[in-house]
Image 1 (cartoon, helix red, strand yellow):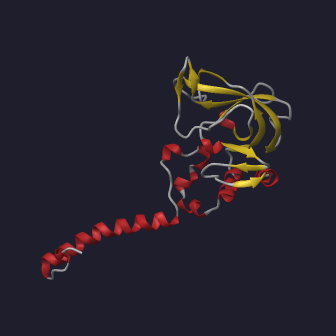
Image 2: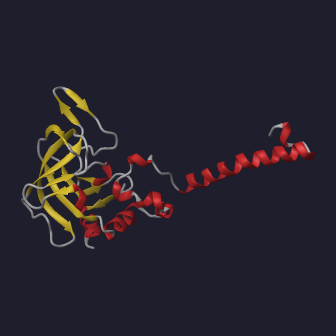
Image 3: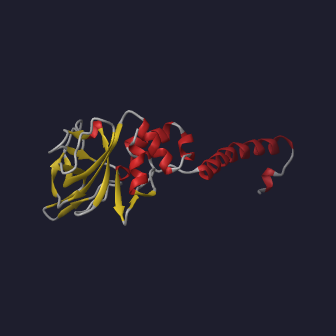
Length: 210
């Protein structure tokens, strides 16, 4: 501690007040860090916005956060499917997009749908999974925090009404954040923040029984 903080009298009191002004915010930051930290806002999925509105959500486990999202109006369910070889082009990553971006469209053959009725997809339906980024003319475009998808993968993809164009055969599901895509490996489902979980397929599917 500096000598200025040990002095008595008016100058010492002023120094103490200045130290308190600095130390209290630092203490608050330390307490937040102890409870859990949020990544940059722009890296969060739209379905995780509530984490920024209500910090108490940080106290929930990843599976509890997914249950909370399923209970809300925006998330319809999840579709499980196997990806094919993608095509890359310039397209929109949302209906309201003012400009087009480099996107990769993966064929996705539905293996099952889990969520609210009526089911928009049936087993065998051919869909398109659209994710930001890709390679055009030998030049690659990477988008921070976009889903990392490859051909021949077994995936669960969250289905939001505002990010789904059409239903059944030919529908396009747009996933712009890595938290919206879950990979199935060895019979387990693996997610990314804020759903960084590792569950069996049966347990994972039960989240969408709402």
